[in-house]
View (cartoon, rainbow, N blue to C red):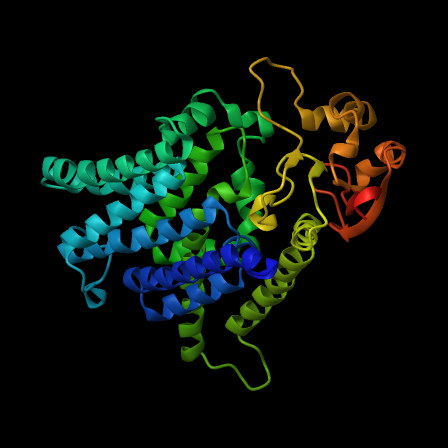
Length: 437
């Protein structure tokens, strides 16, 4: 039988492999559009940036979307260079791929990306329309390239959804209806329209921002810089905003940072500094490393780790046969849940499904509003669960209820040093029913 460690780490190792492919294709894309020196500094930027380190290896659909977007853009621009349709890439960097295969590969990757995250269409609408305007054989491109590839991917994903759901469901259509037409995402919180430009994306790119802006101005590669602005602008229209939504354009911004650093490395060779003094390039690298690497390590190894640690603990306990069922008295989707537990045990978390009636509180909000009353009204006899998991901030409100139902504290896991959007959730606490000890 597999050990819990193997089952827990397998999905992350797979995603890490995808991330490595993303790094490879970003290097190839930078080399294709600019040159090898820019590609090296782009790879440096990609590996050092704190948010990329923190997010790209997580098992999120946005992480896979980012890898597919970078790979698709590489094949798309390889097709452009091969066909000589535009002069965006210099002749000395011509790709070996043929135009037609490269473009079809790019379309296939784009279709897969849209199947995983329908909002990826925002990126490919911009990329496709710019080239479509300049195409001579527009009908041929639509009829022989776009429609066949799109139809095949849609058919395969629809059949897969039918197999999994047991009924015919077009997930991308439901996704768009909920998030775009009905603004269902607003239920989970909204931000001001300029949030991506003034807070979200600057926090992601962090100290690479001035280098990226410098690279945009120096390179005058307006097509890709326009893509970044387009994606940030379109996503700004939506009320519900998250950092991960714009992750696919972060590598492109870091590519411009690489262009700036490459320019500095070339100027360093022309203007040698006297011994004992640090060049602008060396100072820039030191600044980027000391402002990103510690932050990347802290956010990845310490910040909000409690919800992962508790699931790893429950997985080991379940492996030893000491877990019967689990109740999570915490906001919905706070833990990795079955993706880390890997055992067929009944578990229950507080539901946060949006209600058709405005003003109706979901279970998460009702619990946070009146923890003790909610638990008593909804769950009654807690002995139906062998373990209860909750944040320390809510523990004091239901402590007497837990003790009255013969629950004892088993473990306490550190979670966070500071609060994000709720009261300080400094620790995650596990209680176990006395009879299963």
